[in-house]
Amino acid sequence: MINRLKTTLLLSLLTVLMVLMGSAIGGQAGMLFAFVLALAMNFFSYWFSDKIVLKMYGAQEVGAHDHPAFYAMVQRLALRAGLPMPRVYIIPSESPNAFATGRNPQHAAVAATEGILRILTPDELEGVMAHELAHVQNRDILVGTIAATFAGAISMLGNMLQWGALLGAGRSDDEEGAGGLIGSLVMAIVAPLAAMLIQMAVSRSREYLADETGARICGQPLALANALRKLHAASHLLPMQGARPASAHLFIVNPLSGGAFLKLFSTHPPMEERIARLEELARSGR
Image: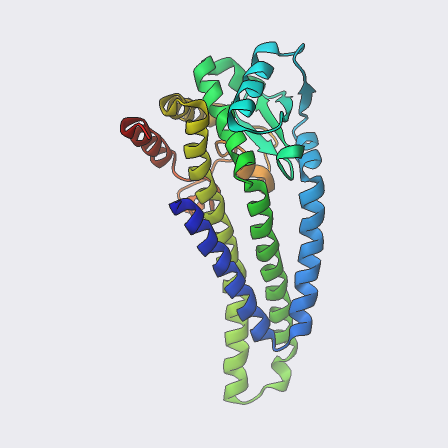
């Protein structure tokens, strides 16, 4: 419940940011144009992002005859979660990871790397796939698309405001005009940055929720916690080649590596906190 409320609050903040940007530009026309353009871009992403990301990582669809144990595991978990059977993919990578995609439960897909199939026990792998099905159940792909729509629109409005301020600088010679120029430039830089941080926070909040929901689906919070511990360590030893920032939020552990500063921009919560929450869930028996 707390994570759902947090997501609602963060999406509301994105809405407020967008209204402020539209107000700064000084009219509805520019805001409407940028918003419609962002909607169009994200509409395309929403309908075709699953095909794009699966092709991006070379994922191969498998059936019951190709990987019987893995396919049966996903089938069992989907039934337990009350979800339609998703398409199942294997990614030819030794870096252990997994993700879910698709615009809704009826068009969902789950993908796991060859590496994750090798290093996890059956119980741990079940916890991971339950986490991915939790993303499908919680409509996280839709939430992420909404957040991306607003963040993209705010970024476009920021560019419009920046160019408008610079082109209008020559017509503003008095002190008030200079102050307005500085204020516009500050908002043009700060608002898109704030929108990106909020979008990252939405993603982190949904990861916590997927951990909790996934633990309930598989019934083994400690198995998922152990899996996360293994994946976190292994992802540093075997980073995913060709991983892209635009799709990093999809994976159960961040396939990208970065310094302490980049943690602020991470789409994933701290692994220690995720594990601690799952261990608390196991202790409480909820």
